[in-house]
Length: 54
Image (cartoon, rainbow, N blue to C red; front, side):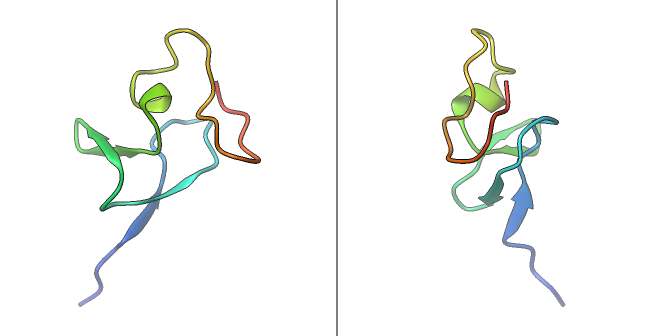
């Protein structure tokens, strides 16, 4: 049996890989930041180096 510990952030434009133990879960989807989890309401990115999602 394989246990998945990491997944891509559920935000479609985000490049981040998030540890499931640290993820912000919204509707069973893992997000790397509050900005991604909330759909970028003020256009801010996730703030992680190398990722320009919005």
